[in-house]
Length: 453
Image (cartoon, rainbow, N blue to C red; front, side, top):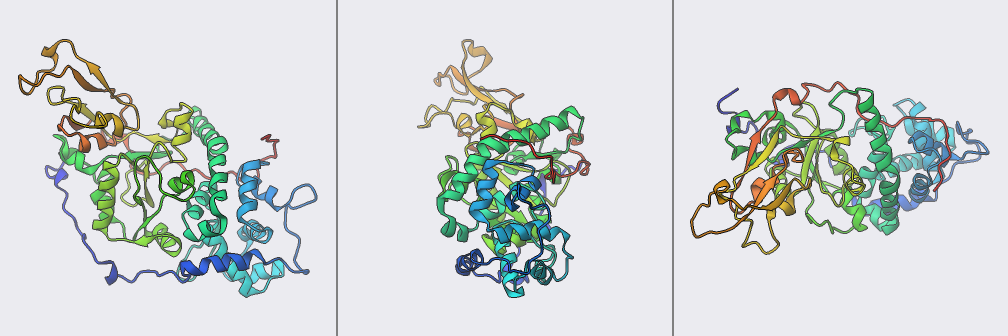
């Protein structure tokens, strides 16, 4: 271990965004609404070729529900019908079989649509979060939802142009789907992987608050891949975007019980896509400030569960909005179906804890904890908790259940009496050196099953 591990020194921060050659959106936000209106009126021509897998019993929406691994799902079909025309769905279905070059030309021939209109269809689908290019400079190599349906959730709802066109209905449809369909499906998948002995790096890992780790007596054990400063310094382009989950639950507003700020950070290629649609590029110091504020708001950062300095995004999740977290918490499921703990836990000094007697809304550690890991207990034997001053008589103290603590360390930062300390309790082996498991992806063309609503 390096003795100065906790005294990490920036290598490239700060830097000036304006001095870099950034990708700039070629579609202005105010123009996207007009683009969507035009594309909604487009239809394929009389010389269009037959669309594979579409027949008298299954239209293009049925086919796409199959591809998204929700066969005959009423909720997924409602979403697709509300946001996409039949032409757009046919493009999504056939684009996987089109050569990466000249996609607009080839799709135009298949569907008998002028190339200029087909290019607009592709741009419309990108703005809605349904397709993504391999190269943002040339707009070459579009593919349909490479990471599955949740990418449509994240990539579409945060675009302000879609708010104006689709209104609150799209958020209500997503809420209905997340609560009733997605939570159950994802948990079943992770449960199956657990039974099959799948690799441990599936899912995401809680990223502890770096400021809390620096205050710890174990600061010399901080690893770069769990240090927000090192991660932010290692990436290139950074984009700040509104959270799709918080927009979903509030119908487009910001009514999360924990934060009103934009806190979602996207990096490098993911950041480029965000800037082209609904986000803005920020500097590395600004990104660290965003993370510091999120930690104090009680949000839980997470990233891929292996030793990487180059995640594609850092989520800042809450227990009231997150589409992975909130529905499962309401159902009584524990987070391990999707998340992994950090290497850190907290310890509470009962001698320093004053139960937040001067705090209006009660103990801050309890209000900020996502995991219900802290509770107040009455102490009858004061010898078990010596008071810092003899005249401070308080027989209620905060206790932490370490089995329930996931190591986000937000409570360390908000405790007014500085009674909470972060401790490193797991070895480096807790986090795999590299990814050994495939990233979760949709299963295409599942056998059709009857799903009743």
